Amino acid sequence: MELLKLVTVKEAKEIIEKNISFKPGIEKISILNSLGRILAEDIYAP
Image 1 (cartoon, helix red, strand yellow):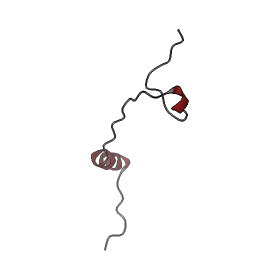
Image 2 (cartoon, rainbow, N blue to C red; image 1 turned 120 degrees about the horizontal axis):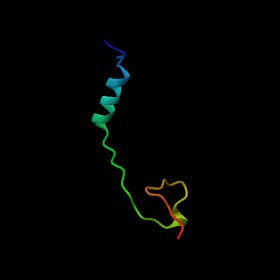
Image 3 (cartoon, rainbow, N blue to C red; image 1 turned 90 degrees about the vertical axis):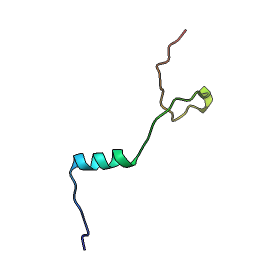
C-alpha cells in the first residue's frame, strides 16, 4: 500500500492546471459594493 506519492513542483502545477479551470471575468458593480474587490482596469479622474 502506497501512503504518499511525492511529485515535483512542476508536476504539481501541471496537475492543478489540468484539474482546475478558473477563468476570471469582469463585472460592473456599484462602488458601494466594491469593498474587497480587485479592479480590472485603472480608474481615471475626469
